[in-house]
Image (cartoon, rainbow, N blue to C red; front, top):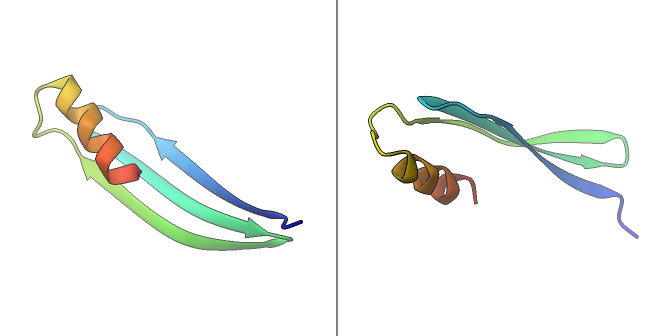
Length: 57
């Protein structure tokens, strides 16, 4: 059985949202991805949620 875990961390925000993804296997942690989404240009909250979904999944 693999002891591997993928962990997603999200810093929610209405104008800037940051996220990071790491992998932990045994006692070793590795960086997979780090990014931020600039959401201030979108006025519609539903559009912001759509962008968050599309960019993090």
